[in-house]
Length: 346
Image (cartoon, rainbow, N blue to C red; front, top):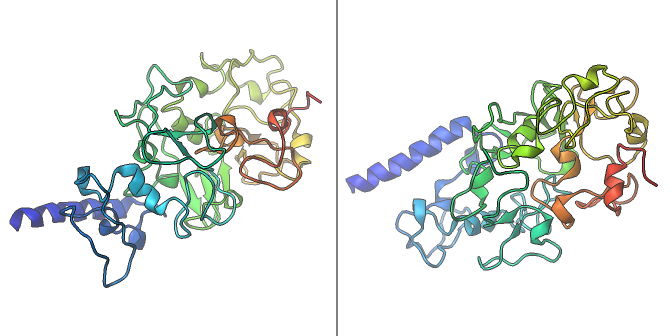
């Protein structure tokens, strides 16, 4: 019993340390050890005091005293439940449109993809493929491939969405404010625990950097950087007044604002401002309007892609600017996404 007491005390201390650091997911009353862990992999009954009962999966015991294999355990709560964000396939529980969309899974792992959520359409659970843009210097998941804890800290962090700080690129923690905006934070949640796209907006504390993009860079190395970086092209400070910046090799994820003369001569702030449905952009002013003096709108990863995925290739958001919104856009096609900002193309 002494050894068991030491083990359980250790688990609770880990939980307590996490509670002290956690944000608004997997925190406080929503972080219960027994929801995910079981001491003997033998429990076959529920609880007399209420609470979620997650059955023991077949094939146990599982590593880390888990009730089931990691992904299946996570999806017990995070797929088609009303009390937690639905992150897999079609939205079967989360109210409103999800900011990150839905994942898909590699065949042969006991998960069935919803119609339209195919491997090409977003992040694929269990995939061991090299991420697009990632090779040299990229974070490499373990032999199990991409799993939930590749990106998220299961016991909570201070970072947006419990995103893990992989530490490959300095300063990749994505900070956030809930309830009241704070322009020094990277993300604004209009209420604690918000998960719908209408409740989320993105600040720009550093006008030459996107912390959100820098976090994605952990895996998608070559797709991210600022003007002047060898992998990106452009030139440092091009958006600050240069009339002839060096050509961009890859689309900027920071550093360049919509409609800036010279640096972005084929994009139009007036076009973006006139759209009813707008893709998400960063803004150092916290306005996100694209009108009047709000000339600081900067596209980044979330402008074009759903973080988990959707029914479009690469999780792209095809937004015409009018019509009924969905997680795929509002009924548009590929070029409509480009024309959120750019005037060229009929």
